[in-house]
Length: 426
Image (tube, rainbow, N blue to C red; front, side, top):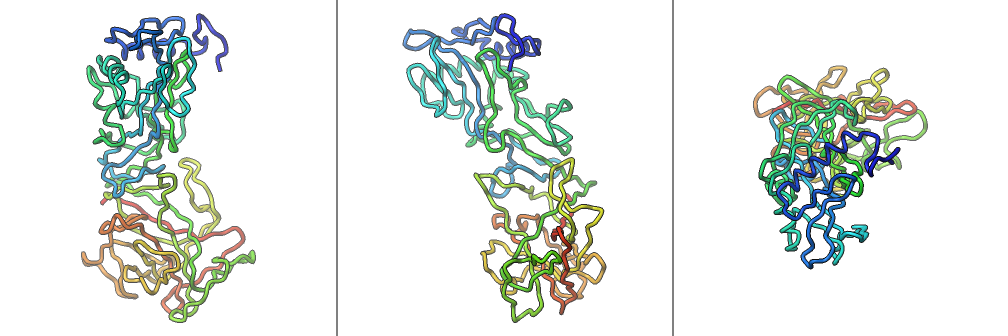
């Protein structure tokens, strides 16, 4: 909302408005039919093919804007990426639209339907001659500095402290802008540190009738964690119920799993919980992992759920969480609901007798009480897939088998069980 106006320009941040005007003028710099009427908030114009009233550019929108890891198996976009240092990340959008409205008319552009008075020109699909001509003229001078960028917020929250990590600016060219179209080979940038990354028009604000927007499920943002050879990161996931085995006692009277699953006669007294395979909802995953990242240590803890104040991710409260002692973890690619763990337990790692139930995928014990240090003992995996079968979503089962050293935990009121993965660069 404008707090006041002066010749149609907001009195607040007026200097920024003029900077943005200059950026838009760069787009139209070589446009013979582009009006120079920037002062007073008058929209930019292009001659109409029918000789009638000119068209005015009233808005620019990047639709379904998000970030992707090009070498990710799948790939599907995600809200959070775990990448290795040196990995490329690409800004992507489904459409990049210039909205043209005939002078004196009003268009809502709700369904992007073209008419005699309203034109939506998509850089990623130039099927209309008017749009082709408008784009050729609009970007003849290239894409101006500050027009569209990727920003990083190291605090994982939008704020005043940020830096530009990628710019679409190009002199006499728009190849980087076009490369972000969904079906193109994407131009990438290399994140150097953790943070929230955002595709943005540097001034996402109203400029008279001109407005810019980055839209979509992710709204052009993603949290990115960069795993380097000198860094390690731990991430937690809450374990959920499985359809077989005994219940995990809960002092609040709500055992887990609920309802009571049937006991498996082949493993009496065994309890299983699981980390389900990753879900893709509305085309997005919550997390995605670079194939250059792997899990090293695995641990299971009980404690009170909490949220990391910096990253917003799930964790357990450090002041009260305790290690528990499973007997092993079992990894099942492409598991189905109702699968018995014992029927698909060929990919497994046993814990040791330590207090933390030591388990390391670099020295995975395929047999109980048999340490393993040979190269054959290395099991490369991320929380979502095994490196050898990256296209098969991975389900993790945590087994508590008293006959093999597992101790079925008891949960206090408000506690949950979580699996903790330590990640490193491959």
